[in-house]
Amino acid sequence: MAEIFHISFERTLERLVAGAIAGKAFEAWTFDDRNSRRRAEQALAAKGITARFRSAYKPLLCFFREEVELSAVEAIEIRYPVHSAAPENRFRLEAYPLAGLVGAARIDFLPRADEGLFYDVTLRRAGKVETHRVLAPNRVHGDAVGQTNLSPTGWLRIAGETQGESLETDYEALFEASIRAVTDHAWGDEEPYFEEMNIRVSHPADDEPLPLGCEVMSLREALHEDLYFSLLEYFQHKSGRPLGDRGLKPGQIVPEIVRGEAEVSVRIATRPLSTAFLDGEDQDIDTAQEPLAARQIAARLEDIGGDTFIAHARSGRTVAARYIRGSDLPVMISGGQHPNETTGIVGALRAAARLKDVAASAHFTISPLENPDGYAIHQRLRRDNPRHMHHAARYTALGDDLEYRTVENAGVHLNEKQIRFEAQAMSGAQLHINLHGYPSHEWTRPLSGYVPRGFGMWTLPKGFFLIMHHHPNFEEQAEILLDRVTRHLGKIPGLLAYNDRQIALCEIHAGQTGFRIINGFPCLCSVDDRHTVPMTLIAEYPDETIYGDAFIAGHEAQMQTVLSAYQAWQEIGAARIA
Image (tube, rainbow, N blue to C red; front, side):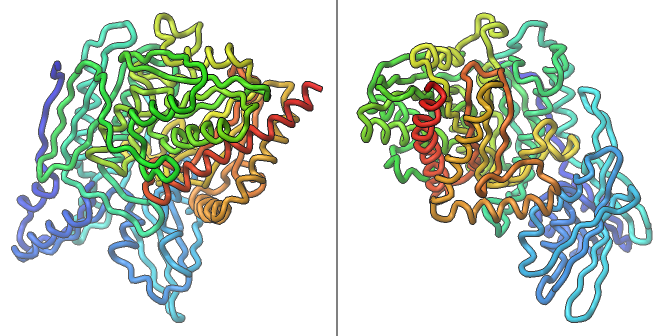
């Protein structure tokens, strides 16, 4: 291991408590959990100093959680900021999931005409009207890749002041110092630049689960996301690629954000790739309540039988697949391209076993874990933070999205992608069912403009989502397949109601969503000849961080997607051939 950077920071709350002056009341907005802020207030109260510590992260939501009594509230009107340096709906998104936490009260979000960084809140209850102004401290700033962002920031306001002033917090200082340490380092000019770059942060913030689905406020999770994607963007910029280019191969970037007792610190180091898995216990696959052990994935694949074909990841881990030969029209089934999206792995295995058991004519390939290096990182990160999204596990150990790796751009690193080329060559399939997931709770980058750059559509959950990419002469077949699959999925008990709840909340906070609803399921269908298979059906279940019954419901929906699409293709594909 080669250390690049190591630094500790004085905690902002401790600095404010130590520097407070008797008789001078104040308010401060910091990146700290509720309990830490309350303890700081109590410490100052013991000295006779009145202070209020509020959250710089999601201030409107925290205002309602910490300062508003919602009983008997009948209607809520929120006039939110609209700023030229941010998307129009940025501050509606930042209020998420408030609309799901106010009970039967009607809630309306209305844009304000000025760029003032505050919310105006009107509450109506029992014929009475209350008004509140909630500060949303933000700063306009540039980042390491030359983009201009409007990002939440710390703030300090002394009693009697109207405006107050910006306050650099430990959270912001740690982020900026980490990015600067990486951008100042001499990485050379050849990709990949390292095997693993590890960013280990200790931060004393507790996660705050919200009483709605899997929603949570987590400063540590948000820091993971912001560090990971900001560093990806830096290496995209360094390589001369456009921002968001998924073919970049910098190496494996792994922020590990652990809960410390008091220290705020970061250590950045390069280290060799690991080659093992941190497997847990085996589970009954039909009722699996959490991601499977890699050992069990391999064993279940062995049970399915058929012809074996393999590829190898950068670390040397095996990407294993099977080919079941039959008289049906062939179909490719895959999961684990993004291995923090875990229900698809289970759903693919369950579907393949079901097809093999019930149809002697079954004809398919199955590659349930296409990115084993990412899966190993996901296992490692879940040990400290099991309910975080961990997008550092999304891409391969090369740091790219294997979907975007081609023979032309791979060089000597075709690696995992070879499994798909082999599957198509062996089977001749014209339909690929590719099982994915996405966050089951809000996804943010608070220090880089809040909304995840390039992933704005995925910042809020919106139910089980289907995407169809097809070649230009497959439009009719694509539409028929989406209709058949969504009709089948609509028969799964509770799934349509689940979708309805998530879509309704998403629309309140995001506004226009831009997707079609087909038989109760959000869908996108587009011509895309980037894929070598003529039709690719992508299933997106909001599964990042779900466990227990929610996990079971997720892999059941994934399995049913495969079974229904497979069966529908036997008719649709046969009609096309005829």
